[in-house]
Image (cartoon, rainbow, N blue to C red):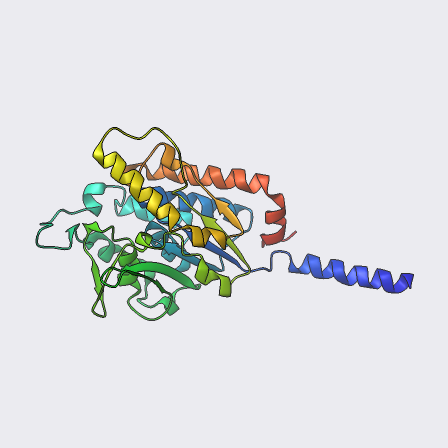
Length: 287
């Protein structure tokens, strides 16, 4: 009996040791404009402890950052891309045009110049890992998840198209806008492809005194709406990181991308330190 007990214990222990770090991990990245640069810092901190995405999902800025990781790039590349192509300059990202004759105040010239070369493909299947993004079909008022087929560049740009600020993106005769309008943390599709989902929400609730102007109230209302439509995604995440760059910066603080990156990096480092069992379970570094 004792011999069988030790054999069983040995097998059980071996299974536990060999399966650590073998679970598939998915990262779900929320929208949040410039605050989404925190995603880069979060992913960097996780990579330092050996936790890498096997699949990734995102909305809006989370879709943009997530698509670059799904294409095989790392945090250094993303930061270099922002610097090289001056994606930190609002006046380059937003090129004003007549809002009365167009569907937005700005087109998408910069991203259409940058993304095709960065991806090297225009299909989801051409990426290095499964990638999911949310877009909003504005005519039919529905959220759409895209993860396969062509028009990768169009869909990523559509997911970042803040209504009114940027033009809608027409794909197969359907007009799409920002994925964060209806699903700002599209973690649900990851349930079928990974074992563990880590969510990164750069628009957490942040109670504070309301600003005494109409623009401030509008921004707060939009943040509440996005937080509410993130609940379904948050519910399926086993771990949630909430970088607090929102306490100091806003969705248009693109010139503060390095500072926002640090918010994400520090938030993830603190979360990792508080959850050593997560690292032990998910790290792909050799023990």
